[in-house]
Image 1 (cartoon, rainbow, N blue to C red):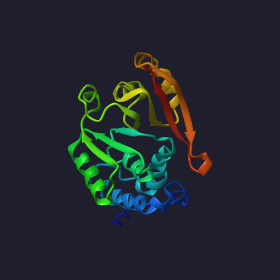
Image 2 (cartoon, rainbow, N blue to C red):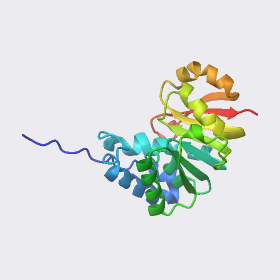
Image 3 (cartoon, rainbow, N blue to C red):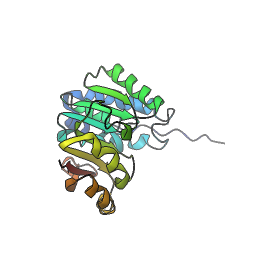
Image 4 (tube, rainbow, N blue to C red):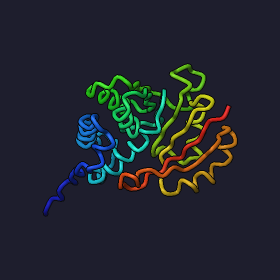
Length: 216
């Protein structure tokens, strides 16, 4: 019986250099590390290597130009988008919020290995943080592939300061998720809720971001 060859890591797209600039070597290092260890550690699925750059690394990097101040990434998992954003934006401080010990261990090991001094790794559940005094409130909160918007908003909105922003990476049904999350949007007094479509200007597949302002 012939063995099926393992999937190969996607070649680096030419847009990566434009997005990461002089931080491209760190982006390559992180991508290689995630490719080597991600499946074993349960961080990415076995079929993701052929799409790792375009579907995960560059998709996460689309948020980088929108960041400012102190940013929290809820459910950081494999470092998507948190570690990617920390690489792309060394001027922004990222707090990676992740409840699973093996994942926080991975995140901290990558932070240490790459010498990132703009990252804090916090092992916690997002819903436990308000009132704890742990690095809150934040200027912005991000999340990717965590849960449906109506479930995600109660986890993320309380972490942001008045006037802060939520920047939540979503799929093609982002608009439908907003419609289904109206109760949570009203409860958490979110304003200017919109879907941003990013990536086309770089010749990439569209990345959809639900952006909302946390009203006082």
